[in-house]
Length: 299
Image (tube, rainbow, N blue to C red; front, side, top):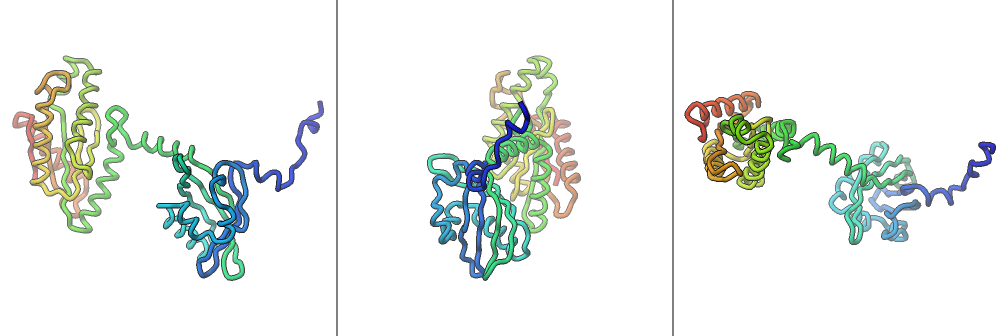
């Protein structure tokens, strides 16, 4: 059979547009802020519960409802595109009745029009893409065994908090935590039980901390807790409360068999983070030197 005979004849735009997995639109915004969609067609579920006739007349209020908490971001993107005649590229969450919101990507090209700006563009449902991005981001930022943030996520967070601390003069402290004699525990009970201890410790630690604190696994049996807006003495009290709770908890290997040595240190305005972490490490080694199952601090 000739190849040409199995190729479908070209379809007109009116027939083709409803078949595409997205929405083709023409959007107008006047210089005084009035907005409307002069054209809005496409396939998928995204248009079924939207009042297209209202959008064609006056889109201001409906856009605000449809973009919800993303509305300021959308309006900022529109303003930037209109002012500088730059391509409009953004995304927002579109709420659905009795269903989870869908992520919508917008891509459009502006052109001057009478008393305003026209955009010709497309909107695509990228919910699956966003879910995959979030999954990969979580993999990059999460310790696979404990589910805690990993070193990468911790350092980004600590860098952000230290900048805020330096800017506003607010306290910031950290705990450096190490499980005592963890190798001995692994040798006696096996690595699977050791892994269970690490997972249970992560859960117990998070339950004892405040919502604004971050506990992260650095590797092996070593953890760090970052405590924003917390001076050294308060950090020491929280660390001792954590140490006591762990020492009196049965992790499946007997009460008192899992204990922590903890070193605490407070951020000094402007110091490198390496210096802060080194001081917390030194305090941790001091805790081990004096007998373990205790908290030491370095001012």
